Amino acid sequence: MNMITRRETLEIAASAALLAASTQSLSAANRSPNEKVNVAVLGCGRGANLASWFATLPESQLVAVCDPDENRGQGLCARVQELSGKKPRYVSDFRTLLDSDEVDALAVATPDHWHAPATIMGCLAGKDVYVEKPASHNIAEGRLAIEAARKHGRIVQHGTNLRGSPHYHEAAKLLKEGVIGKIMMVKAINNQKRGRMMPQPDSPEPAGVNYELWQGPAPARPFNRNRFHGGWHWLWDYGTGDLGNDGVHQVDIGRLLTGVKAPKAVSCTGAKLGSAGDAQETPDTMVVTWEYDDLLYVYEQRDFTPYRMQGHRLDNDNIVYGEIGYMMIDRDGYRVFFKGEKGPEFHKTWQDTPNHYQNFIECVKNRKAENLLADIEEGHYSSMLCHLGNISYRTGRRLVFDPKSETFPSDPEANKFLSRQYRKGYELPKV
Image (tube, rainbow, N blue to C red; front, side):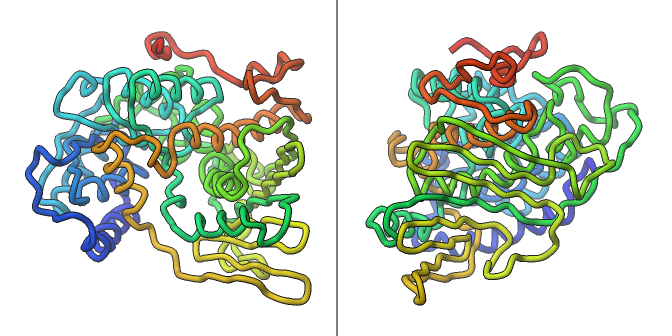
């Protein structure tokens, strides 16, 4: 568990191979070091994939790997050296790099509860930030991350990397032009098979692990394998469930296609159907509805399904319903349907290309935040929808939301979930 998995190693190798074929049209790779953006990656799960990109893109280089687990951190440093010929240094605590001129940007791929704090600290220290999804662990700290980025003039990209696929933007243009008429309803679908997380006893923390730092802002608890690598996704202290983990991609695409931001109300029903009896706290099955003035946005999650749905090319996708037709769209393309006939269609097998990561590096160099594919504010709204769904699930009722104040005007209990109590020594910095 402490070493990089075979799957992560294969992902790094695959990313590097794809990069070699994809960057030929980019600027020349033989650049001097002072023209490259120096990146530090925080976290070695999803961070292993980010490390492969930033270590091999022509205009960036990986100078540090940060992880409270030295075993994983040192392992990723060695893998990066194999890919790029340069070995980044290992650092346990990313905060030791904040005052360093060696680092230009942070790539935050920690557990969710560290996303916004690391982003805010980075902005205050004059670093640009690529932060994985979701942008925050709660709504209040997400808004604070925007304020930090704006006040300090930082470039902050959100890790909803599907926005790097051009066909989503082409589909959004078709919808804006009225290909299916007025949009009445949007559905985001997260449909896959997740493994179970059976209860485990508390145990001593493994050698080489700074568990105190790993817990960070979260409450202090004994070490448990289920709270560590991977399992944290399904525990409220650290993660946001699969809605914030994977569903946020489809939630974000629904927003891209329609332009919606904060809703006026949210409701959710959820259950543990495929994970009943295990240690997972978050639901594996959910139906969330976000209400807008003239549109309903629905999210469906089924983490117990090993099959694809009839008529869908992939497990996860979006459906946009209009007055005269509907569009189905996923990572491979889109299809438009009218009554008795088919409309425009595009299909191409999806790959994780350098687009999203290259876009971040380009904006870091030219300082044009308006050119980001997923600026932190876009990330905040997509993450907000996920947080709202989880809050409705945890309170068990429909909630009226004020988009301006980003609060629940008449529900003190629900408002408690808008932020959290930060552990002493890990409080959010003042912006």
